[in-house]
Length: 124
Image (cartoon, rainbow, N blue to C red; front, side, top):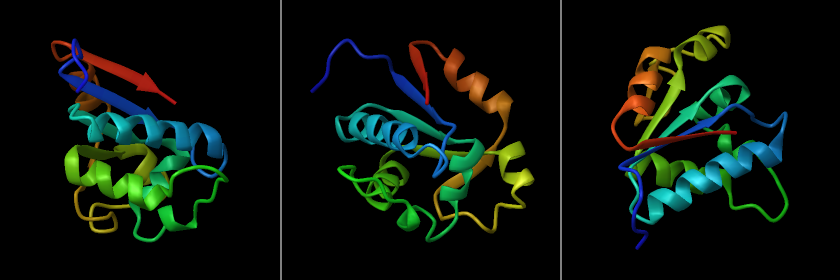
């Protein structure tokens, strides 16, 4: 078990299939933290917003990387997964379109989370 950690780790994925290594890093760090017992809030922004839709994570491929659907399932099951309001709207994704367990929220919620006492934020 990790010690001396912040109470919340906020990870913001800004890349999707357009930058697969960066995308995979965000999912891997967030899911590893969640599996280690860290409270994680994972944000899907930019091109990663597409992964809020059913079946989209299964289309992602990167050699030597953990399967994205497995990582996303872990994050939904153990933490908070949020799709950015503006990013979702630009892609015509609404609350009824996203996977169960994923919410759509905006910058105010993101700022609130990262400003919480002891929170740490990572952006990929």
